[in-house]
Length: 246
Image (tube, rainbow, N blue to C red; front, top):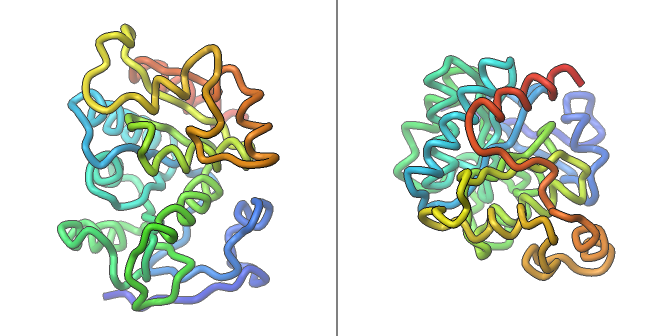
């Protein structure tokens, strides 16, 4: 097992893209490597349908082909598909944890963890080694996922999903928010209520994103909340090219 290293916010190795976000982590614990500047977050529900899995797979494969690393949260479902697909494409992937880097969750992904690190990626957390996961830390890590990334892709999620926190942080941090939808939203299978809310041309209730104060004003002013709604892998690939050319 690779040992965990600690990097403080005032050290040169600390990811520059995290320093400018609201409430940045003061310290990161890392197993393996830190993500490059050219990285994107791919997130979603723990209970995806075939639609969500397909989006996550296409998003990760396309990102790697475009020279981007993939950031996600190691959770079951969409996160796992994103990590596995990035590795299958020969790319780098990075898991941001709501626990210590030595106690990744779920336990079923212990082999995936080692594959991520062995391939040149890494595990990151703001909690010290030995810290078990809890809900507050899982939400807090979402701001790190978006903060490390040039853009955030919501593959499939419910309104109650933790991925909606990542969407909110993307908006507050000024990261492009990409949301996937079937071409006929009425035929959306599985948990897509979060996607539909984020892609609604009329916008969505800021309370859906647990936004308060200034956050509510920013989120509530967006029509829709998503910066881009995509329906297939071709649209995702075109976005990756534009992102890299920006």
